[in-house]
Length: 376
Ligand SMILES: [Zn+2]
Image (cartoon, rainbow, N blue to C red; front, side, top):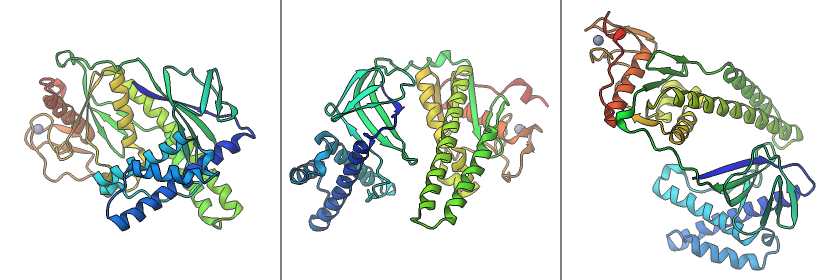
């Protein structure tokens, strides 16, 4: 399994060497973007990573500034660009790779050469030694080392390692005993098919207010001024703290769900569509990030996850008799089935339907609604 260990680097005078290498990488990126575009204008096609690599290597021989970055790290820049271009070719919505300002380009990666790690919290990069906060031990065989600068200007070191740890195989279908369906919402972050409601914690709301405040402060400053720069760092810091807290809560929630259930069904979210329907607030809540964290945790713990197609009418179908209510608006939190008379909590009903749909999709078997919900 491939994982990443990320640590904060201690600040030191030698940081300037790392920052310089990030900037060299930015310069090479921008040069390669320009080359690719020029090549396309002349020949009408993409030059490909190999041709770019050769060309950049030739230029680098005459350019002492570029030589400050090791040849493998240069290769990595070209490979990143190559991946970005292939992403763009397969999905034009991903956008054409762009020029990046030096402060926007944030990292470089070393493969086998250019670093030495004797263990502990010290590492040698190029000709200099650095220390980092070893918050947890590194496990596995180190494949690459990446130096990263965040928006606040702090430096981080990321070790990409290969571990022997295998993800737990998911439980066989017959063994699935505790299924659950999840419904995401604005009013309540998660509603489970057993009726449990999980609210997003209060710091979400408070944090968003802080982010907005920092944004407003930034917009009042004059671009390019010292105060502007300070306000930008402040915004980056606030944002960084909020997203860390949120991520932490996502992980805890995902673990709690995987502890209690061995099969999780959820809606295949279409964030763009949700934004159109509900507004920008959707991206603040981070549903997409939560889903990928949940999938990651579930894979590790051998919990099955099924995604139910979006057009499935999860909120409008009665989970007792299958009747579909045609005119259900977003404001209706509760509704009554006209055929069987059951009173439904909108989100819980949706979660039950999602659970059942997911289960039938996987062939887990018949997951019946709870008895209590049937009789009225
Ligand atoms: Zn009904």
